[in-house]
Length: 284
Ligand SMILES: NC(=O)C1=CN([C@@H]2O[C@H](COP(=O)(O)OP(=O)(O)OC[C@H]3O[C@@H](n4cnc5c(N)ncnc54)[C@H](OP(=O)(O)O)[C@@H]3O)[C@@H](O)[C@H]2O)C=CC1
Ligand SMILES: Nc1nc(=O)c2c([nH]1)NC[C@@H]1CN(c3ccc(C(=O)N[C@@H](CCC(=O)O)C(=O)O)cc3)C=[N+]21
Ligand SMILES: [Mg+2]
Image (cartoon, rainbow, N blue to C red; front, side):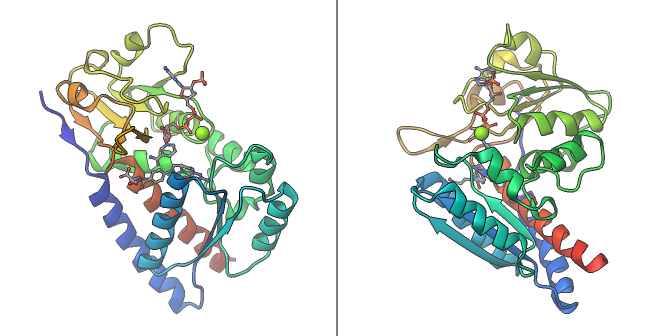
């Protein structure tokens, strides 16, 4: 078997076109949706993502601002900026790029963002709303993965799903969404014994560990759908995922590539969340 390659770029384009239409409608009604992205420090990968996010906003007609600060920005100054953006009616979504420098408490920063503007869906109240089945914002990366599964017409109800990785931002919300859609879900982590035993039983495998090429073809059931969230930059400067593309491709039924898979979908869903935040201000 050779896996179908899931084209995240094409699906992201389609979703961003829908965002453009909704943006145009909002602008007609006097609201220009606005996203603020805050970047602290000079991590080159973060700079690329932030630039991509701003370009995507611009293309879809959203207002976007990028605030870039030096590595030495104090936590108090960052919290003050968030407070100002919370109270800025031109801004509907706020994203603080992770990771933050060590002297800044990321948890405190996330909790400072108004939940109604938390387009990452990282705030505890948004995590709680997702967990209890009434999400305000679905975290962009798992949301994008669900859209990929939907576009591939993957049957989730009754499926066995394994999520490899248990972060608050990817693995855990991913598992909740699959579970809500009717899958039987296992979440694996770095302490899991015999990871391959778990993944080989899965109809759907989502990998988000940050360990390059850690999932190999022998760990995948024939015909399974494999979604690779990992973004790793090799010494050669090339991106690779958490799945060993060559070997997994020979076993899986469908596989998302890196680059060109989940990454572009994350950005598309960020725009969706921002437009929803803006539409909500109209509703009341
Ligand atoms: N495409 C996109 O849009 C995005 C991509 N990413 C990428 O996804 C990857 C994961 O990101 P993130 O969730 O933030 O990472 P974290 O480092 O926060 O979490 C990694 C998780 O993977 C688990 N893990 C690590 N090693 C193993 C292993 N050998 N076997 C099983 N589980 C393991 C960890 O286990 P434990 O809990 O035991 O420590 C942890 O739960 C990264 O490559 C990141 O760059 C992230 C966000 C968005
Ligand atoms: N508050 C916050 N929210 C995030 O959503 C967030 C974050 N912090 N910190 C970092 C991770 C990572 N992330 C990516 C987004 C897009 C691509 C992406 O577009 N990737 C392209 C390639 C881009 C390239 O060439 O480097 C692709 O996979 O095809 C990747 C990774 C969002 N994250
Ligand atoms: Mg992380």
